[in-house]
Image (tube, rainbow, N blue to C red; front, side, top):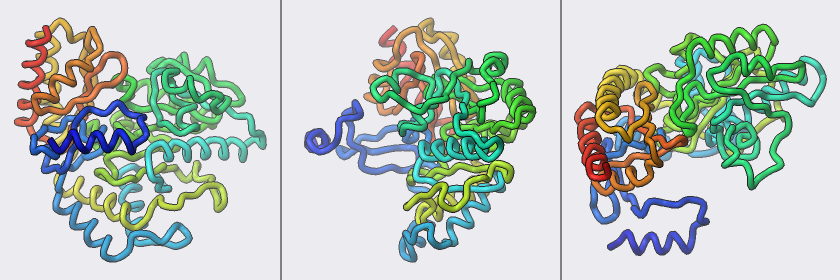
Length: 396
């Protein structure tokens, strides 16, 4: 088998920071992946909520081919047309004012942290400010984003981290208020916690945080890296609650597989000036041409309408599973970011399902996570449910 040979080479060459599933993917088509031995898999993970448009979208690929023949990189010492166009489109769909393009979500969080600290320093002249983040959150693996991740499992081997980070209870406004003091410069959270177990924020919680930040003149930062870009059934999950943050981090589905992220700010929070922040590759013409095409396709193909329709169907089917199998403890989520919580770790379930040709991934708190491409149809849900039901029936 080709896969075994490739995996042996990979184990010798790659740093072992992942316990990879023993599959070597070669190509994708629509919402399916194919491995090097020709086996077909229905993808309900989308590269961890990244490949929103699925594989082989012709408009997306045409935009990349067109741009790669023109220009791929010049640096941010100069303007480039795709970055300007992508930024304008991102402003329009987000309601934010300014855009800084990064290479990843974790870099977007780093920029958001720097923005919060600079905003507070300009306001009071001091440099010992604090950020309130949430328990069970996940914001990335770099040192700043790791510092605001509310899960000791990811942090222990890398301490000391950034100082001045305090953790509140998610969906508990009083818990947040109890931590606010004269040093607080920002409140940071995911409108839907992804890695932490698919926990949506209550609209009242987000609205309360907005009011609190306005009263205290501190920045409200939303991490929409996983839950944004249409996955919740709104372009950004915070829009469901009618709340605009001061800073918002975006990545994953923005590039449909290209390495791009961004942090967006309101005009009030646009405090970074030349010399404060930078990136060599962020916002280069190639990735921004891709992001610009993604934003066009979202509108032209009515992606969010599809998320709402198929997301409701997925909810109905997963609710039926919850009611049928005692091993399913809870069902949470919205749109095409949903999760089933089990009474035991669901790793064996995911491993058995993938043998049946369906890709599912897990999250914290014994959760099986459903974050498929945003272009799936009801028949794909049925195909996934059939495989999952077979496994649940076999495993009991």
